[in-house]
Image (cartoon, rainbow, N blue to C red):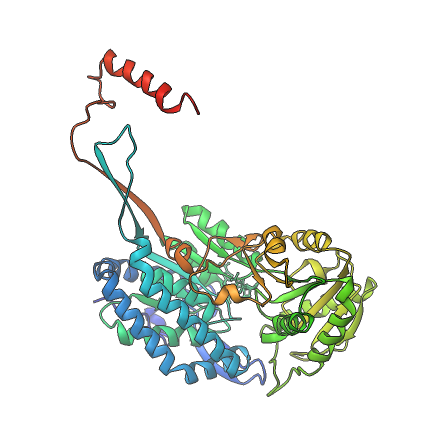
Length: 505
Ligand code: NDP
């Protein structure tokens, strides 16, 4: 049996030369207190982890769908029973309230269950029609695992997001090497240790910890596929590294999601969704609402309701929203607010003095021009821009003008589906926020700068496999086509068949 990676620092003589620091610290973003110290795994250590994963791959595949599903179900049980401890760890590492971390665990468990239960149905062999010219063949297709998949995850939903890749890659029969964000390595290790308890035989899921360079090493380690979730800027680097070895990638990148409020909307519900969608997790949500487009007929009511609701949300220790996890993000939020205000925008709540250290109070901005960075770039803070529109056509054009294309929400009593169909993002929720991310059978992912490929659902399972097409000749063809012994009679018949089969199309 191959050995799992050490989770403490190896002795210096056992370590290959490292370019960066040997370890890194994780600090509670609320207090600055040390939460843990983790190894900064080197490229050689990443390669060794991938080699172990490769050696374990056959064993995991040979277990078959049913046994893998049993193990994944038991993993789900471990996660559920440890939910309280896990939520506390999420809070300590990245700062969100424990109740929000618990919500994340609940959602992740649903996807894990779905992946385990549906992998065989979606990926198992199935017969497909062979067609007239090849009627003597049986044709089947099945979806086979890549072998080893590398998963690179972000810190903002350190359970829900990586599990969207881990659950589906594992259920499909891959072994996985997982690189969590440097802000949440403890959560990544916790998940791996829980997995080890239900799959003790082989290192089917390994967690490597480290900084960006460790992730870059994983891209170059010869895995079958990389499942990346993170910012668009890092996504570009990941793709460039993967291009060197033609390693396929799944890109779950950033967003600038909009919420559209039609004149026939339930305005109270829309305001509630916009405020939760924009402020929860301190706005550090890829699918978070950052822009709101409201029809002029309901604009005043919407703004008044949103401001009232948002005023009751406090960022601070024990508040409804926690600190900004990444120190450098605070300056980006500050710059976006400043840009909006400098270009004629107004803050109805929060604004330039909303930032105090790592805490950012809810900020609602109106009259912000569409070319302000507060509208064009991912802010990743508890801010909303609210823009009045004259028509739903205008709202749709503005939503679609974004370089991003991850998700959107539409509030309308009668026209939701019509509006949703015209919005060019990977996902749209009508009369709700983000419902599509919780429904396990729906694919989740973006277009344009939000990435490509899908997690969740049947598409999410296929994402970590390749289609394997097999034919079996059942009897000799009366019309042998692929042979030099083919005669003029066959050629004439083929000529007639082309006319018969396709000539009238
Ligand atoms: P980053 O892009 O900063 O990091 C993502 C991961 O990539 C981290 O594990 C990071 O490691 C790693 N990494 C950094 N540099 C490299 C490199 N050169 N090669 C390989 N890996 C590297 O994103 P964040 O962690 O800040 O997460 C927030 C972003 O994620 C937001 O843009 C958000 O929208 C997006 N996101 C998208 C989701 C989706 O479903 N589309 C879901 C959740 C988040 P390290 O932390 O050590 O630097």
